[in-house]
Image 1 (cartoon, rainbow, N blue to C red):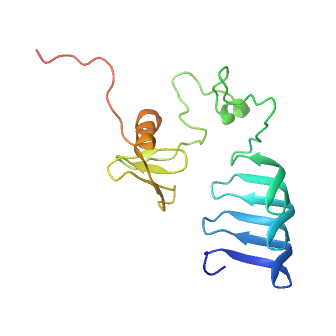
Image 2: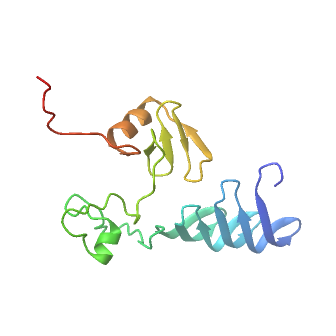
Length: 173
């Protein structure tokens, strides 16, 4: 495990992870649950660095049944998913706590929204710098280099870390 950057604390059998254990990936994603022959097997939960989690039943390292819960407590439902569909675009916090008064926009599901570094975009899993084309996580650790398609999508759709004047501009003439 020292070669992969992973960590394990738990039961072993014949030199392999087996029984109850806690496994941490180098990405800081953590698994807590049952292991068999070095694989997730039985009941276990993956905890992601963003606060979300995936509770599942595992067979030989493969999730056969599970439930994903977002960091804000919203549980994903494959059937009858009504959150953020074409008819109701409210954030989960707005569904739970109601809409803000007129004139006060809620820009993200996070209240208050993250402060975006100057010149960057919030692309959902971190900040994107269009000059360097690098995405870093919210702790400013490297995630990836953006390709042309991702760059175009981020610049077109994501929140910016700066204000721009939009609307009517009176001419100087």
